[in-house]
Image (cartoon, rainbow, N blue to C red):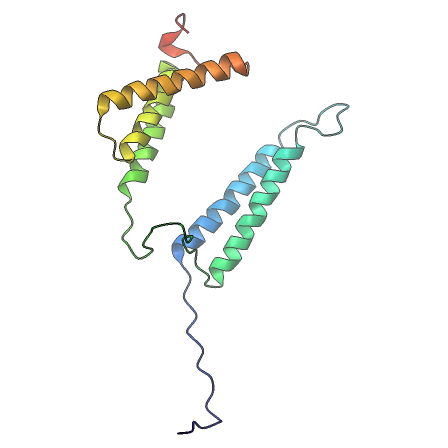
Length: 173
């Protein structure tokens, strides 16, 4: 049995563009652009060899470069594949509920932050993340969220000297 020598080799069909990969790539590029715009608002340091703009500038340019490369790969049809250590099924349906729970918790926490304070607002965010990860021991979730938010508040205000809104806990903290 011989094959005809003039038969062209069969090349596999190129996969189409993955909208999810393209959206992530464009999102990363957009984050880089926003970081760069924010970096350009930082004033120059005086008498400093390395001013306050250097590291944010490096991060923003690196993020834009990474986003650009990911966008190029997504447009060429390359797809993100899970690592070998990941036990995921790329063809499994996507669950949009849990990211939505985290996003809603973040928005509620951000809304409550100025009036109720950093500890309460941040605890709402931590609580929503625990709920999204299927934790249902509500008492434990509330306790851990408040303790972690309180530790974060103390570290940021006492350790780093930052000013965070105490809200209804003013005078206690």
